[in-house]
Image 1 (cartoon, rainbow, N blue to C red):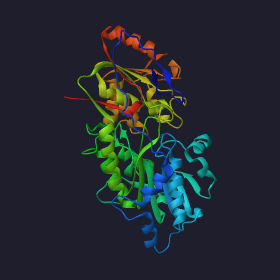
Image 2: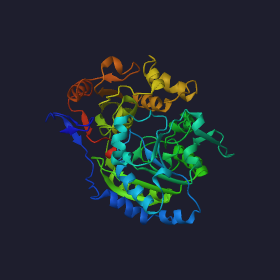
Image 3: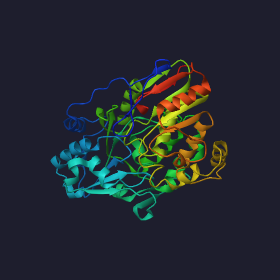
Image 4: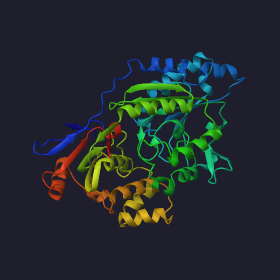
Length: 426
């Protein structure tokens, strides 16, 4: 069978003697004409004036900011942009007034190859394309809110635009509950200090900071409060299937759009299981989600949902970028020679407060529950020294794990990353 891995996948040779369960996503059929469907959704918004009416009601629009996801997200952004730009032009907005802002958060800027993938033919249009840089204070504006004690710094291009449009996709997120919605602003367009406040050790440690949980989750609550200070005029969010094709579209009011697509995700993504497993094989859904080890932590959090305490997670991610370009603090911590419990406790006590600490916090939390084997293109000496284990193939990782857990050990295989998530029925 094939597991998502990089651009082409990786074959897993199934041993008929394995005590194995495979959970695959429910088939979700793609929308046949996504550009037209985007335009139709814009014309028929949820809980909002139409984009045309918004533009007509404004006396003068000098600048439009369209926010899009960065290169680590598999969303087919070019379809959304093509449909949206056609609508804006029909409503009298000149291309030269439009800035497309890539919501990078603290991720690195996109490469030329990635920009070509994101934009397609849209890159030939007369629009400005800008990467958000969270550490560039000159590109940020500081806001103040007595209800939020931490600094609120937001991209000034977005803040100062006359028309603000968010785009993105909704899927379960390993500590934000779900992606999409206000997450495009915080952390997407936030300054580094604001991201650190949102992704604080206290917030990440919350039992509600998990896949699929919105209620009582402190991260989206903080994000919402910050984002409402800068405003959103119109939102276009989508859902995608395992082939990264658009299956659902909603446009209009940011809250109602997000809620509608979250409801859709809840029907398709979670699969109840009756017990936890000794061994869980899972990845991040292939390229670009498995670009590096930093992103691969999300797949380990998928495994955490289905593995028993003391079990084994086999994380299958290509990691063509290695640890991750720009993830210097993450790399420093995974090579710190400290054990997972020590790192986790230091983060909790705020003895470690650095960029990317949330990824290490989640990784060490999982390592305290189960062992993790990484199957990737990385060499053994490249995966750090805090507890991650190396395996050259998935088959060998399973064989080693069966020695530990016994030949009748229960194995769960999730071949398509977070497109399907195990949920233990207690």
